[in-house]
Image 1 (cartoon, rainbow, N blue to C red):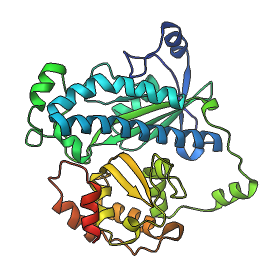
Image 2 (cartoon, rainbow, N blue to C red; image 1 turned 90 degrees about the vertical axis):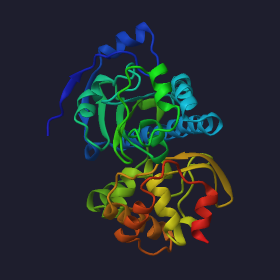
Image 3 (cartoon, rainbow, N blue to C red; image 1 turned 120 degrees about the vertical axis):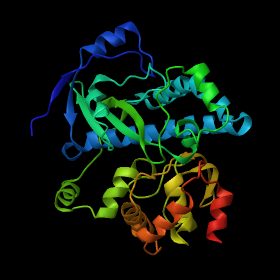
Image 4 (cartoon, helix red, strand yellow; image 1 turned 45 degrees about the vertical axis):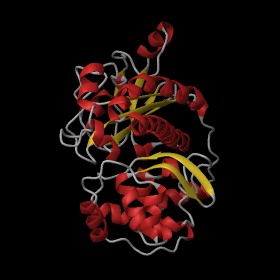
Length: 340
């Protein structure tokens, strides 16, 4: 299949600021669509790095917003999000040596326009990640944001908006379009641009390449690679001090109730896993059907030596119905109650 080339012209202001020189260079870049199955090992490593960077930004931003909401309510969190989103993006961009931002078809901040390589994909409202590659070898990744339970307080329908939110939106975002969503809806996108020098070229043996070519992923593993591996690692070992491991942990292998609800609605705040504390935010994946969620969790509970049993679509459906109106992520105390 021939790749489609596009000339990039940046529209408006993006979360990561660029000087006039940078904008001139960016406008001259040529990008091509990059299919997931056509990536080189280096491009795949860059795409995974984009996913981890998105995870870091999501953790930091949601942690900041939730801290403000707990202290002063979600109305105050609107103002904090407006003032802190760009500095957080700039910090993550500098640390990861990337460019990163957020965008949507229904913008809250009209300045958050997508880079032009992502315009068509964003406008098509497809609910899966898509990629591009520049002539200079950069990989652009657009990663969907599905509405998590806590985000219902600021982006949900009128009956779910928290007190003070409508007033704060009128004050800070008078042209806001970003409400009326249901849990799991496609809310927008993180976009990430990774230069080739930010990620080392992986050493891949011919044996590993042959195995990858010959081996099809199971349905559960394919879902894990798409939704979880960027943060938790393809081996389930996580990233120290950032994303917890999924190997040999009680919440993964014991009664699956806690694993189901945190996968649907997310988890926030300090979480102890295998003796280490992870203090961040993990969004839920409520957009997945009961069948896909059951397949994904069954894979996690049986992979890498884990000994948990299967999760059925009926179990997921029961918990989804019970938590349908939940507008907050789960805490460690709540999850521990479910596993006792």
